[in-house]
Amino acid sequence: MLSKFRFILFLVISFSIAGCNGGRVEELEHRVSELESQLKKVNSNLSDAESEVSTLQSAVEDLNSAVDEFQFRDWRVVVSNVQTAASEVESAASSVESSVDDAVSAAN
Image (cartoon, rainbow, N blue to C red; front, side, top):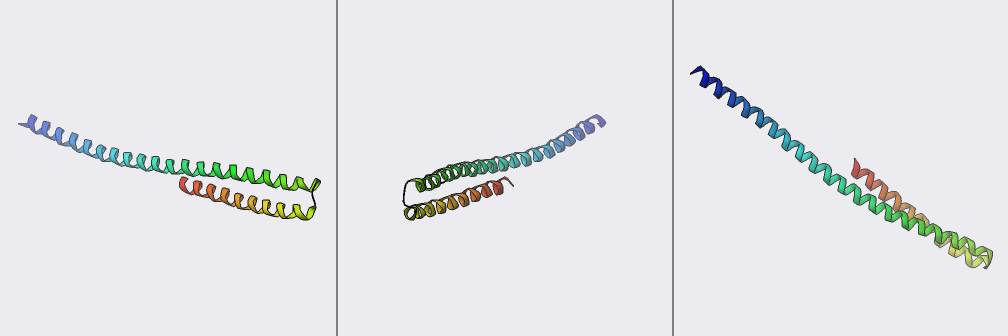
């Protein structure tokens, strides 16, 4: 009889421990899922930032081209082109900054 009691006690303790570990496993699986989702969002935001950097690089090239026009065109015409290109650089830089901020936010 004592042996059956010990066996039953052993089973109860084993199932209790297994239940506790099962809950911990579920908690960890949930956390892994959350982290995977967060990582996808970060990757998406970083991809957006890369795209914005390309746009910024293009805007800088356009600005450089506009500035180069001073060598062979009337400065009155070129100033307008430079102002437009400078505005595009400013806008692109702002977009890059925003995209990087979004990526950093998603990582936290």
